[in-house]
Image 1: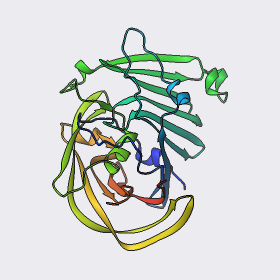
Image 2 (image 1 turned 90 degrees about the vertical axis):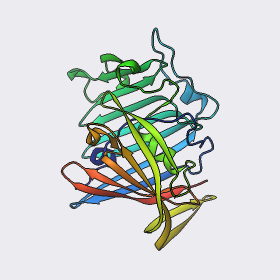
Image 3 (image 1 turned 135 degrees about the horizontal axis):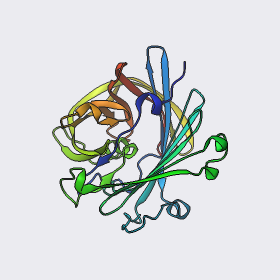
Image 4 (image 1 turned 45 degrees about the horizontal axis):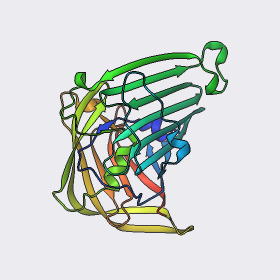
Length: 291
């Protein structure tokens, strides 16, 4: 049985501090990660690239609200997955300097069909949901007409500080891995927009360690196999704080999540945490493109 990473592990959403991770120049372009649990395998590819003019033109407008603009350091993150006949693509527009998100779009086709867009504004998050009618099922998403719209004001979500940028979920692993946390004891506080609420999340470097790593590393267009039973790693712990910590999901991992990062290349080697009904799950790097 094959299960995609998004289906097995899901996504959450986050807010970051104004100081931010400062990764406007992407240290890596793409990674492929895989998880295995109880005979099931989950795989996902994540690509990060500078925001093109074409991608900027896809940012939607929200009536009566000022949308979060895409600046010159904008990045586009794309995650693609597949599960049991269901294809999923998630795209996130965000600022590489501080993580501020402008938009997140999820498109699912196959057995489940839907399009969901979160557009961030100065006062809240506008959500657009689009589904096919029964007659439109199986047709191109551009033909779907069953629409609904919701606006979630920050004032009702418990946002602690209006100066702190809103960060979408899929960008978090990239921002933390590629960010500036490098020494044991260093930390940043993020704020998670999860299930119509905002929860604080602390990212803290807890130790220098080693991990068994086996993956393909692509540099200058050439691939080489990395097989290191004791690969150096920086362990960063992401700890949510709130009444319902388990409702906070980072790549679908509930509660506290541990991230092992290559201290030089800043690529994620492992991401681990709990998944409902499956227990602890570890997602391991399979391939990384760094330039």
